[in-house]
Length: 170
Image (cartoon, rainbow, N blue to C red; front, side, top):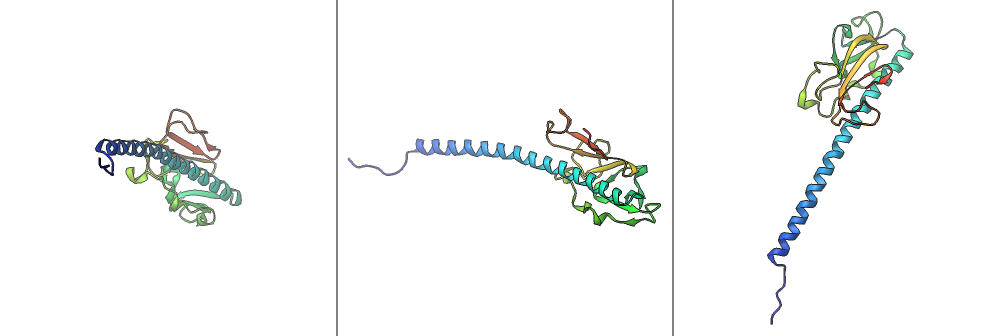
């Protein structure tokens, strides 16, 4: 009797099925890890903005938060367009933003899916971090969205959040 070398069709199908199952489980686990990483970046970015505003205000008590040369008092702006200015107005003030933080790099990891300024505060979709209400470092609100609803340190059962000069408030 001769012995055959190799695997039977059933053995190969079982191995392929097991590899497929393991690959599916790995993809599911990796997707959750990606969401957590993006949410961590969002929280870190917002804390960095608040810290930069606080540091700039401490160094410059006449600090204004501006949308380019326009005041934030009348509306909202993308945080990446925010400027810190010293002086009487946003038009005539000196931009000191670069001394504290590079706001151009602070964008939501999923912002490209819903580009633009969020229409509400807090925002209701992943979009650029948005700053609202007030042109002073003691009167502003930043809105942002997380992908997960229950993150440690944030309001439970929601993924719409705000922060102000006191930190992340919900």
